[in-house]
Image 1 (cartoon, rainbow, N blue to C red):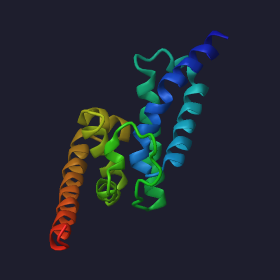
Image 2 (image 1 turned 90 degrees about the vertical axis):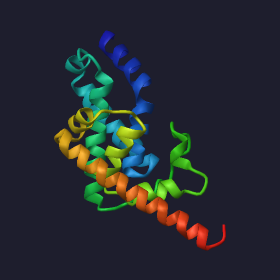
Image 3 (image 1 turned 135 degrees about the vertical axis):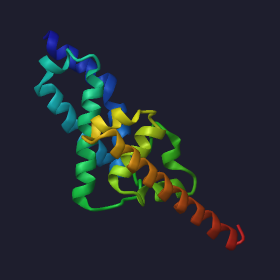
Image 4 (image 1 turned 180 degrees about the horizontal axis):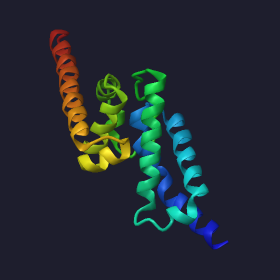
Length: 165
C-alpha cells in the first residue's frame, strides 16, 4: 500500500506539469495527455527505483518530453497548438494565434528547446539531458528556433501593417 499511495500522490502532484511541458511540442492537448500517461506508466513500472531519485518528477518530464519529440518527428508535422484550454502559460493561446502559428513552424526539437528554455526556464544542459543531446546542440536548436520565430513574427507584423491594421 505504501508504494501505491506514494505513487498516487506523485502522479497527482506532477501530472499536469508534465502535460503542460508536452503540449507545445506535439501541438495537441489530447496527444500530450496520452504521452504524459505513457511516461507515468513507465515511472510506475520502475517506481521502487524512480521514487528514490532526488526529483522523480524531472525523470518523468524527461521521458515525456523525449517521447513527445520522437512522436512529433515521426509524424513529420508542424502542427498548430490546437487544443490547449487550460494551458499553464497563456502565451500558447494568444489572442490571434500568432505565437501558436510561429511555434508550429519550428521543428519539434527547436520547439522543445525554445519552450523548455524560455517558458520553463531550463538550462541547456537540462534540455540536452531531456532530449538526449549535447548542450551545444541545444544551443544550436535554440538559436535557429528563435531566429525562425523572429522571422515568422516579423512577417506577420509586416503583413498586418500592409493590410492597414
